[in-house]
Amino acid sequence: MSTLPKSIQNLINEFGKLPGIGPKTASRLAFYLLKAPNLDLQSFAQAVANLQKDLIYCSMCFNMAESDPCKICADRQRNQDLICVVEDPLDVVAMDQISDFNGVYHVLGGVISPLDGIGPDNLKIAELLKRLEPAGAKEIVLATNPSLEGEATAMYIAKQLKQPKFEHVKVTRLARGLPSGADLEYADEFTLTKALEGRREY
Image 1: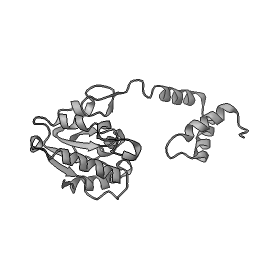
Image 2 (image 1 turned 45 degrees about the horizontal axis):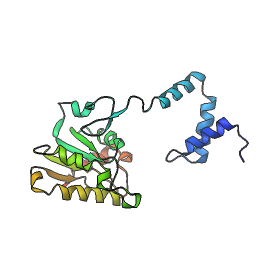
Image 3 (image 1 turned 135 degrees about the vertical axis):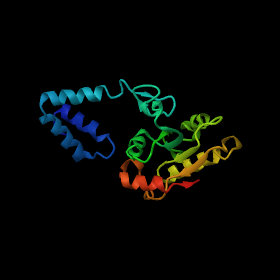
Image 4 (image 1 turned 90 degrees about the vertical axis):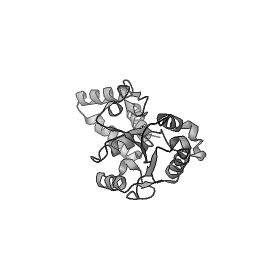
């Protein structure tokens, strides 16, 4: 049984629910906030409270945004004929650090994972296909993570794009500059640049 005051223990428990945060790290974070100046604590609490307040999902790419369409989709300087398909919004952040990439994105909202009850209908795949009709983008870069689920999702999308109505679309996959099983969001800019440069037709 914890001897800590309930308010501190509750905060530790909440931090412990975050990915990659174990009990010791959760305790360190809670005690750091306890020692922080009052103004810092209020700013932190306000930022957490407002986290989802002004967020919406772009109706074109399904990335998180503050406007619809999002800044990336609305930017006419970007190559609208090149769409990078990613799993999550964090992958957009990772890919957009690459100065060589000037296309737009499509966020699937996850990957096909039968064990978790996630099928193609649970993702934004139908919306991607609709985006390509009748003469949408010229190239799709499948940038799902190199995991079993990521590969299965990329293969499923590539198969859908083999239909005659999508013959105008070139389908490519990020090269193996990414180690197998790694997540896109943790890759450095150089690795992502090489993976993009070496993308192959899928």
